[in-house]
Image 1 (cartoon, rainbow, N blue to C red):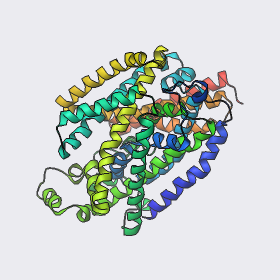
Image 2: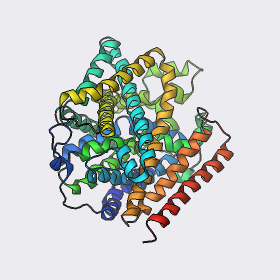
Image 3: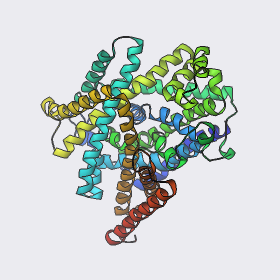
Image 4: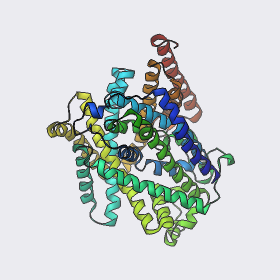
Length: 493
């Protein structure tokens, strides 16, 4: 519990202190924002700062900082360090600089920013890549919540249709009509759940593994985990530490801000808040799996089921959604079960809706089409919905196959983070600002994504040491390319 307390304090101090450093380096001013200059009552609409924060938080969070943190803690207390340092120096900086860049460029998306700072070829690649990611996320977050809801009431396909119609509404309607009204309520419920669980942790004071007890792969010896800590931990915990998915969501809020000075609480602050969510659930996971908490919180019938079977290990039997349900029901009672339902069902649905809306905006920027008329929005949304329906149909027919695809999505969001950090680094270098702010995390994330691509059994499946050497060499080449570009185009200022 000491590691948890110190990590919580560090995240808060990170916002209080380091966010000021990032803000001072970027230099927000009083220029007119896109929400005012390009107001269209559809995507560019001024909204209150607190509402923007809530929407940004829910858009970037979803179930990511819950499920990812639970699975990330399977590697052991090293997860604490990744959440704290990754969030403060990586994820929050990534979100703030990229969000402010979008704000400075009329609320444009990641692909357009990539084109401005990394070139036309990179832009085209990012248009395709981010579109694929958005539709995959949207399709995935239709069927899974429908399965859960059908277990409570109604038919599965009826819920699929209802959720998809909701996606149509969030994609087509003005941002203040559905997203602006519903998302803050769901964000508030998630925050309440996290605060309540954090209080229970401090009351119970369970004896948990601390950072100084060892930073090795605890899951390998105790839980049968086969993945290496590096780079798997840094891909497993994305939301809550560093996630490139956030760079696809921030432009929506950049189009709703009335002042650049809202950037620090909205972009940096929402990421720190997400880090706290991840920290709480990582600690709960440590309690559940390493301190035999599962014996204390599981109902007797669930304990009997687990102990009566031998085919599944502890982490296979108690997957992340199951842990959320059991812990919330045990610690928070009936109300906790309702909050768990909101976390498992509402959060992915809202993330999916935002993903489809982001896909429409990506297409509108790629083809230079205005979105003020319903006909123009429908023209871009129909192909997005068509691909989403096709992926959904494939998922329903091949549920296990989609799980494999989702592993690539997990890697994809970290690959987007690496690209985004390089975009931010090039911008800071061109502006003669302290580019080290984003260069260090950019180099680290490049190493992570290249190593994961090489070592993962679902991709190249190379042996660990050769993949580590190869990824280090590739990362060094990318870094050297940046240094060469800077000396040739920017100089040593």
